[in-house]
Image 1 (cartoon, rainbow, N blue to C red):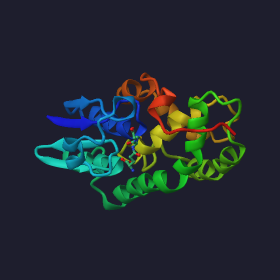
Image 2 (image 1 turned 90 degrees about the horizontal axis):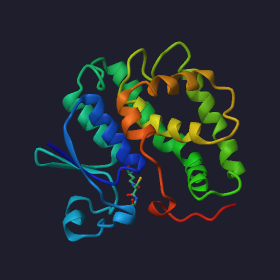
Image 3 (image 1 turned 60 degrees about the vertical axis):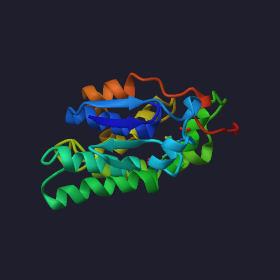
Image 4 (image 1 turned 30 degrees about the vertical axis):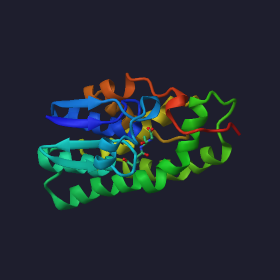
Length: 213
Ligand SMILES: N[C@@H](CCC(=O)N[C@@H](CS)C(=O)NCC(=O)O)C(=O)O
């Protein structure tokens, strides 16, 4: 049985919960982090010296870093599904996982904190900075159902968390119909519904401090 440490309202923990659901893997989730605390306890510090979530333990193997965890679970339990066997398709999926961290997450994160803190407006510069990556994703999704082709893969999981945030904001979402259609496809997946859409994100006290702009 896989153990997952991390509060379920963390986006990085949700990636792992959703991934397990896609793979039909049983797991035990332990609330830690945010208002639950525990990140600096000696036992947890031995598992994850970063004092961050998520961390997993699987058959004696301990792993942290959410995207690395998704890759590990996909390769170990999802060969031919979440983990494409074709190296080109797999590299395509993999690329979008890195791109989530490096390119589209940085501009959206302050918007999320602004939303959680009920700020009167979203930070304008972040909103503007979202346009280019969204258009990049929109172009990549033209003619395909998921980020690495016609089948759902590990590549859709990190970006699925971004899409959840983006479409939760009451804003002009730019004209990106392929992104919207892909998001609607994700919304049909039971694991996404259970671990992302139906679990409240927040409260603000579970997340880092933010001053409204
Ligand atoms: N790059 C790491 C980031 C981990 C991270 O920053 N996790 C946040 C939650 S999303 C955290 O541990 N925050 C402290 C807390 O929850 O108390 C990953 O993807 O796993």
